[in-house]
Amino acid sequence: MTIGTPPQPFDVVLDTGSSDLWFATTACTSCPPGTELLDPSSSSSLASNVGGSGSVTLRYGSGTASGPLASDTVALGPFSVANQVFVAVDAVGDGLNTTGQAGILGLAFQGLAVSSAVPFWQALLNGNQFAAPEFAFFLARSQSTGNAPGGALTLGGRNATLFQGDVDFQAFSFQNQGGSFWTQTVAGVTVNGKSVSVPGGAQALAAIDTGTTLIGAPTAAVNAIWGAVPGAQSMGAQTPGFFAFPCNAKPAIALSFGGPAWPISIQDLNLGPVGGGLCLGGLFDLSQGTNVQVGAGNPAWIVGDTFLVRAPFPPPAGSI
Image (cartoon, rainbow, N blue to C red; front, side, top):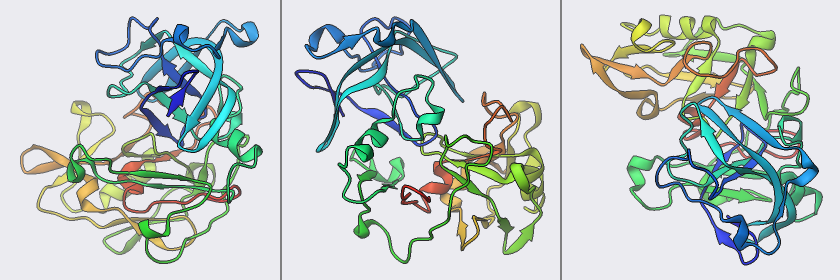
């Protein structure tokens, strides 16, 4: 996307699990080497210290980013928002690594925004820039695409050439979320074709999160799922919250949100060997394997790219 006058182009992480937009700036001395940096002084349209709020800190499962609020013209493809509020990041911490990219474009709802800013996509929707009130992701596996662009974000519609079959429309729940995350209720889980018992109620609420690589779930659900996989065992203190399973096995794990059961490809579930003929699994205990606070308004599940690469979701403005 681009920002400023004249436009400065940057790569950003597209994240449906957060709502703030931020760019690393030339004032950031703790940003990892190779990070693309925004030069605020190079934009004639940038307004700094918006709201006089001082520095804000954004917290993610893998670290933090902080800086003052600013605003400028931000564009993605043919879509543009003037005076879009963003965080001009001057510090990152706790191991946050956006793999050299300049920042994160949050695609969840305003209720989740630490900056209180209207998210970019909602500003587009409010400005009648969408042909249809929806956006859609197509995710590709990086190892199969090399350096070529692998994924696609379609704003204001869905690209019918990127999926087959019917769209499974499920109303999303704002239960205990204040309209913040794209949420679904995990209605059922099967392992090798057999149902396993997973918690219901608030413990079944899941955030659909393109900014998370793996699948995080409540302790009881993780234990039940891996308990149904022959030969699976906890990684214990070596890798807290994770399980390993025999590398020659192909456990068929599927999630349902009230409609069809969506399978998780073994290609994405298997994260590679850890020794002793075992391979690490891509579904982990959210209370141990991340910095995300369990409870505290956060969904009990985080359904990330390990699942979404297999089952892309096109979320309309009332469903996902």
